[in-house]
Each structure stands twice: as C-alpha cells, then as structure tokens.
Amino acid sequence: MKIAVITGAGQGIGRAIAYHFAAQGYAVSLLDSDTDAVCESLAHIVGAGGLAMHYVGDVACRADVEAWLSQTETDFGTPDVLVNNAGIARNRSFLELSEEDFERVMAVNLRGTFLCSQNTVRRMVRVKRPGAIINLASTRALMSEPGTEAYSASKGAIVALTHAMAVSLGPHRIRVNAISPGWIEVSDWQKAGIARAPHHSETDLAQHPVGRVGRPSDIAEACLFLAEAAGFITGQNLVVDGGMTIKMIYAE
Ligand SMILES: NC(=O)c1ccc[n+]([C@@H]2O[C@H](COP(=O)([O-])OP(=O)(O)OC[C@H]3O[C@@H](n4cnc5c(N)ncnc54)[C@H](O)[C@@H]3O)[C@@H](O)[C@H]2O)c1
Image (cartoon, rainbow, N blue to C red; front, side):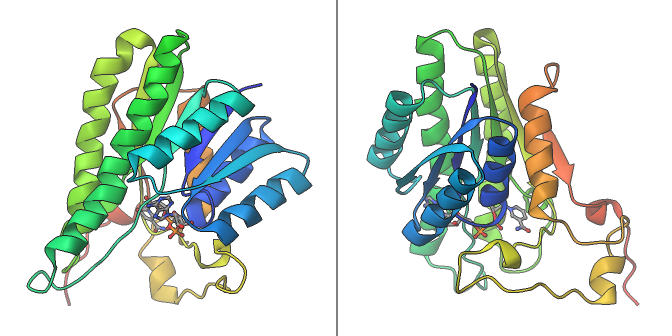
C-alpha cells in the first residue's frame, strides 16, 4: 500500500487531498494544528473504509514535524508522497505589516515546506525509495492585490524552492512540483461549526474562462496526477485556476 503524508489536512484543500488519496487506496497521514478539524478528517476517511492516522502539530516546528513523520514511519512505513499544503495568510496594509506577521507567514508557508520536505526526503533516501513531493504555491506567487506582501513572497519562494529541490533530488528519483491554485472555494470544506455554503456572484463566475470558481477536488486531482502519472514532470509549477490568470482585464 502506498503512503501519502499531507499537511494542513484538517480543512479546505488539504482535507480534499487526504480524502482523494485515501479513496485511491493510499494510507494517509494527516498533520494539522487544529485538533477538531484533523479529527473530523480522520473520522471521515476511516468511516469510508480508508486507512489513516493523524498528528496535531505545527509545520513550522521542527520537533513536531520530526515526531509526526517518525510516528507515520512506525505506523505505516516510509512515505511515497508528501503534499506540503498547510498555509496561512495575514494580509495587511504594507505600511502596517508587522515583522512578527511577516515572519509567521514565512515560517508556516516556507519553513514548514522546507522542514517537512527535508525530513521526509531523509527517510525516502535512507530506504532508497523513489517519491513525489507536491508543494502548494499560489497564483499570487506571480500576481498580487494590495496588502499581500508576506503571503505572495512566501509563495514565490515556494516556487523557487520547488525547482531547486527538483534538481537536487532528481538523482534520488524524487520528483518535486508545485501547484498554484487560483480561487478555490473552501468555505464548505471547513470543520463543523465554521463550514458554510458558498455563494458566488455572476461576476465571480465570469472572471473564470471555465465559468466557475475552483473546488478543492480540482487541486486534489492535480496532486494525484503529479504524484502518479507525471513521471517526466519535475520542478514545475502547475497553475490550476480555471484560466483566471490568463484572462486580460481592461479597467472601465
Ligand atoms: N483556497 C484558495 O483559494 C487557495 C489559493 C491558492 C493557494 N492556496 C493554498 O492552498 C493551501 C490550503 O489552503 P486552504 O484554502 O485549503 O486553507 P484552509 O485555511 O482552509 O486550511 C488550511 C489548513 O491548514 C492548517 N494549518 C494552518 N497552519 C498550520 C500549521 N502551522 N501547521 C499545521 N497545520 C496548519 C489549518 O488548521 C487548516 O486546517 C495553502 O497553502 C494556501 O496558501 C489556497
């Protein structure tokens, strides 16, 4: 049985990725800092007949990452696939953005991706196991709204980290790719008490050439493709945004 380890798997896109890999027969190990959320994801997968374990921790904390992957190795074995999905945004006016907020966003999004990748790769290399790593970047790595400096910088760095790791890890038969989601609606993929039905205006739909806003399953399917069918693809940044960022817009 193949093993996938997924960060931020308690809610949103990470939850959908965990469900999708579990449904494809993977044993999935879920890390999230939110206990209620990750327990819900775990219960859903196990209830559907899947094999899953969970760990409550912070991707930015080396000790938590080490403990999570060590427990995963004990329970399931060495991972085949890592999805670095956990991410936060603290969007503020550039003039108001504190050093603490900037560093926390960088710590979770960028350092977390580095720590989880390095720890997982050491385990893959030790047993000479090929693997795939998928990093969640964002279309905001390449374009912005005002007040998104920390988030955009962290995602741009993830795209760069992805191609650097792909070159370093090629000889170990480990492929590394990024996915840049556009607008993915996650409000109905939150934990109980927070989840709500999404609402989109006609304008929201019309700014996507495919005519709709993204779903977490769109990203989960792209992850599975990069993990399994994409043996000749590494170091790339796959944009999954319904065409939103290739549509030219003229101000009226
Ligand atoms: N939703 C979108 O439109 C969108 C667009 C582009 C990129 N992304 C990226 O996709 C990823 C998932 O986004 P989402 O919208 O599903 O987010 P979300 O907020 O719905 O879910 C994120 C999950 O990560 C967990 N998490 C947060 N910080 C953590 C930490 N330090 N350690 C462990 N777990 C932590 C949260 O508890 C939560 O369960 C993020 O990296 C995000 O930047 C999302």
